[in-house]
Amino acid sequence: MKFLFDLLPVILFFSAYQYYKGHKEAAAELLNSLFASAGLVGGFLPEQSSILVATLVVILATAGQVGWLLLRKKHVDKMLWISLGLIVVMGGATLWLRDPVYLKWKFTVVEWLFAVVLLVSAIAFDKNLIRKMLDEHVVLPDAIWLRLNLAWVAFFVFMGLLNLYIAFSFSEEIWVAFKLYGGMGLMILFIIAQGLFLAKYITDKPEEKT
Image (cartoon, rainbow, N blue to C red; front, side, top):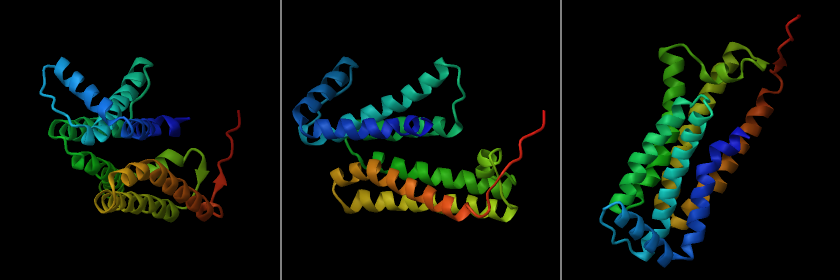
């Protein structure tokens, strides 16, 4: 369930883009109306508006995630706060300048930020965040925890680079599809490969006697 919740902004981004790709005039009209009601300069053109409406949707969806958690008095992860800040700044720049390049870079920045946090936490603070998330469920040798942490660092770096390659080497439509299907698919494959590698090391923690 949490996986779907985390993926919700990407799903809505993809859905909005797919719908307004076939309704570009409606997308331009919607954006011009929203900007005019806010007292801002509109002038959006149909050919650019589908990606810009999708950008607005992902900003609102990410803000909605944070708002929903706060209303339910749930903990909001630091990375979700950071993701919200980045999407507001870089998504806002995309809308203001009518240039999706800022949005395309946002996804890479987030992936690399995950990698930096994992690496710096392990090196500078001797905290393996992957171990912290999984230690309650499995027992692994220290060396394997380190390799697991580094594997996630490498994966996030790779995903950031791949995003830039897809974004600037292929069409906008292919990049949008990659964000949903490619990103999710590679994540699932990585988790499966990780599980197969760890299977021989994993030992369930014994239950505490009451």
